[in-house]
Structures are given as structure tokens and as C-alpha cells.
Length: 253
Length: 249
Ligand SMILES: Nc1ncnc2c1ncn2[C@@H]1O[C@H](COP(=O)(O)OP(=O)(O)O)[C@@H](O)[C@H]1O
Ligand SMILES: [Mg+2]
Image 1 (spheres, rainbow over the protein chains, first blue to last red):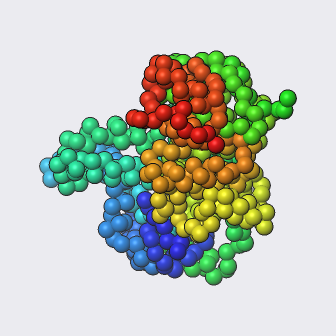
Image 2: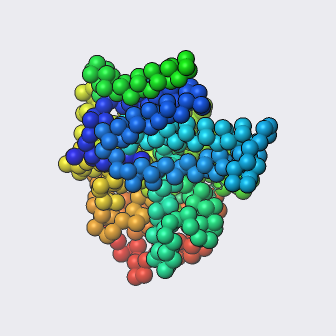
Image 3: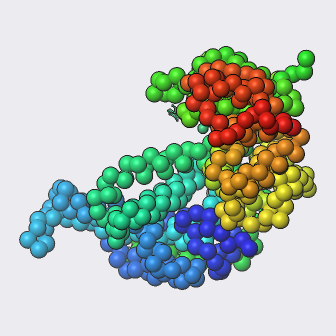
């Protein structure tokens, strides 16, 4: 039995996407994200095609939609920021529902929302089907610089740790008769955010110390080497290749 | 005289916020010895332990493991020589399977192939955890996870095994099982604890630390028997426990 809840972004189970080699998935995810980033903001149809492609990947990976939306909550700060842009932006303005909004700001908000949602969803598909050590190993095998691997590792780990601590704190609140429908509702959140941050940070530090204590120098040891079969690359690359075709077409038209 | 397995000389340290945590700590551990470090919460025990693995660098003084000074150039080798078992196994175990977690340490030191497999199996056997090799660590009980955590450092073949509060939060049966396993290991041991009976059962010698200073060093039975010393440093013996009635191993 190798199905483990290793990190909070991981979805138990078997799927064609789970079976792909980690570095293949990481490469596919990065290529897709670059394609999304390179898409001109006016090409609405291109973003729509990208979204359909991603939906296909989510289905193939058997990721529950509820899980996906739950993890997309990391976008909330970006969404809030995006909502501010039309008000704060300069240049020409337009009237929407009686509000004077900056046109540049509206484009900025749209770009952030569209690109961040697609990019984060792509990372979730990758992370939901790959365990942390394999992601780190995958980055190593793609010759990604050690510093970036380390940062990626920490980001995944901290997210995991934060979600874990959030769960524990919610249980503690519930057991004292406080029942917020969602953790981010209510006054208790404001008071717990600080301690959540500190607890998560400290835990992340200890995990890192424990890795370093066993000689970790920024590279994951390789236990089962060997390169991925051509078939894996072919399957994984469908999504990013179509996305790139779409991007190139949208750049030329 | 043999080379000490661990030599801590005049070690002082403060965290960046400026509070001194270790003050001129000075002691040796000889090969084959089992030494307990006793002290109340906040005494600086964990801080000292992090120095033994070069995770923290001394403000003043020095740490030497089996003759090798813990300087910047030697950090990697020092980390192999000192096998550090953290207090919370959940901080230590992070790979998808027990087998991979135990392999992580030696693999970081370039051990591979059949030798790596051999090390992993040896270490798991030493803690009686062979049968869980392919399970994910977080599916195990706390007692089992702590035993696996010990295996993850034994696999590096360290010169000295350092344990931070190994008996904390264990139920009586797991606590006893772990003691039995530690007892059976043929390795130099430095064990931080405030579980006084555990120190008496496992270690012939104890150090007492309070407010960053070593305040006592001697045979465990004598130290625990010194009511005055124990009280002065907030080390409370369990109700009805009389160290003079316990037969040391
Ligand atoms: N990372 C840190 N930064 C600042 N102070 C710390 C840190 N870690 C521990 N301390 C302080 O150092 C003292 C000793 O802590 P510690 O070594 O964990 O003690 P013990 O393990 O004996 O309970 C405590 O007062 C603690 O608050
Ligand atoms: Mg401690």
C-alpha cells in the first residue's frame, strides 16, 4: 500500500496522471504555465481553450471538484488585489454600474484572475498526483537550480503545515463550542491568524532542521533512477502542446 | 585515554534576540557511555543538542565529535557522526514510506545500491520495525514512529546517538518497548529527558542543566538521590519513586 496522505495537496488514489513520472509532470505543468503567461490578454478564446484542457486533466487525474476549489482558496489574496486594481489604476476610465473604473485596471484585474487561476489549477493537478519527495526529485532531474527546488519544497511544506495547523485550531475552537461555518469566518480568525503563522513557521523550521540533520544539502537522493518512457512524455505533453499552439495562434492573430 | 565520542568545551550561545541560553557548558562523553541530560523546560537542552549536529554554531567554545571539530568545513561529516533523533517524530519522518525515510540519511552521504538496502534493513531490524518497511510513516502509532525515527539515524552508522526527550507522550507500553530497544543498541548515547526513571533505567551517568549551565555531573542514582539538588532545579521524582531501591542495569 503506497497510497498516503503525504501532503495536503495530495489526492489519494490511482489515475493515469498519478502514474506519470514526477519530472514529466513538473515539466508539463511548467510548459503549460508558460503558455498561459505568454497568451495575450485580449485572446479570451485562448483562455477558454486552456480552461477546457485543464478540466480534462483534472478529470483524468480523478481530482474531486470540491478538493480543487478548496485548494484554489490560496488565490484569495490575489483576487482581493485584482478587485482593487480597477479603482486604483490610472489612465482612461469607464462607467460600470455608476462606478468610474480605470480601463487599464480592469485589464490588469482580468489578466491576474485568468492567468493566476489557470496557473494555480495546473500546479494543483501536478501536486495532487505527486508526493513531495517526488516533486523535489523531479525538479532535481530537470536540472532546476537547487535554490528554486528548495523554495518549491518549502512552499509545499508550509502550505501543508498551515492547513494542518488550521485543522487543529478549528478542532480546538469547535471543542470549545465555537462553530464557524468556515475557518475564515468570524472574529476568531483574526486572533488566530498570528498564532497560526508562528506555529506553522516553527514547525516548518523543525522539519527543515531534521532534514539537514540527516545530511540534506538541497538535493533529494535518487532511489529508483531510470528515465521516463517515451509514452509518458507523449501523454503528459498533450495538454501543454495544445496550449502552446493556442498561444502561438493567438499571438499571430 | 581514548578520543571522546563527544567533547563540548566552554560552549556559550545566545539566540539573536540576545537572551543567553547556554553558558560555558563543558563536558565529555566517552565511547560506549550512555549519558542523560536532565533539566527543566527551557533549560537549554534542545539548544545544546542542535549544536551537537552543527545546526547551531557556537557563540563561544567548541564541539568535537569523535575527534572532529564541528567547524564550517566539517558540517557534513559531523552530521553523519551525530545521529540526532528529534523530539517529535512528525518533524523527522517525511518520506512516503518507512523504507525511503530510513534510506534518506545514508543516501545523503552517498551510500547506494545493495549497501544502502543492507543499512536500511539493519537499522529497521535493530528497532524491530522490519514489517512496516513499506508503510507510510504517518500510519504508524507514535511509539512505532519514534522507533522508525531512531532507525533513520542508525542507518547513518553514527558515532553517537543523540535523543531529545525520547519517552515524551508515549504510553507506558511503548515507553517500555523503546527503553528495551535503546538498551539493546551497542552505541554511545546522549539522551535528553526529564523522565527521571527513564534516565536511571538507561544511563549510568547524568548531567543536570538549568538556565543554560551544567550544575551536576555524576552517576545517575546518586544525582537522583540528591533531593536537595533535584528540588533546586525543578526535577520532581514521580510519587513513591525511590532511586536507591532500583537496581541499575
Ligand atoms: N529559535 C529560538 N529563538 C529564540 N529563543 C529560543 C529559540 N528556541 C528556544 N529559545 C529559548 O531558549 C531557551 C531554551 O530553550 P530550549 O533549548 O528549547 O530548552 P529545553 O529543550 O531545555 O526545554 C528557552 O528560554 C527558549 O524560549
Ligand atoms: Mg526541548
